[in-house]
Image (cartoon, rainbow, N blue to C red; front, side, top):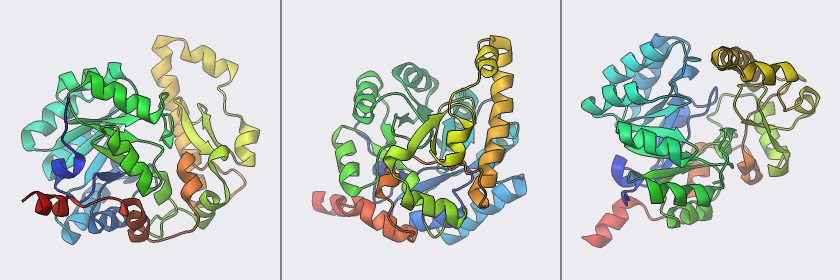
Length: 327
């Protein structure tokens, strides 16, 4: 059982990751997070070309030397995966978060060059698998997570993983306040990954309508749908989502039962769904498909990242003060 916390692992003030959010995370958000004593990651897929990915990393590095990460989708739906991995191994971000697939190659290539690898998991089975492969930590994606979500309650999942793996457990989902960060850390989590409350930040480039939706809707308006990616995805229950429905159709369910077809069907559903989400994120229309988690409950205005992080860390003691008190 590991007692190492994320702030110690990365040399940051607070054990918090501003979570990588598809379409939303950008270099501005990462820089603001690093300036505020936490770390952040962005999805490699948020950049269409290798040049754009390199430029984002360069921009962050020119601003600060503090540690940040990149999220990699490691299954067949990401046809850019191998090129993205090559680039990251070359440019060496502090850590990579793997999602939706087998992280074996990422771990094998990144660990020798000093890149930490954290793997998204939703249960003990997958946590043990990635630990055996050499992962540095697991991201425990619980049933309160925004975007692709898990099935287990936050505390139950942290405690299950802590009892069954010896690497650090970082909790993802259900955190929107400083008191909640402290509570999750009290369960033995090494840190927290927080996403939804940052969608309504000034630094996020999504539409004003998307940000305003986080203010106007609440936790009871978050629903899960399998229609957009083939895996459970949390979205705001707008009138269009209600019209679209959240359950897979008969034909989608039938095709998903065929093991040979399943991965290709999910790829098609995922590509189609992500394009629809992209249109909604950056432009207003009646076809609103806005990803978010239940922590929209804590979003009351559009604010700069530094203010959101200031509130999130208010009840915490930064690592440098902890070290000073020990010495």
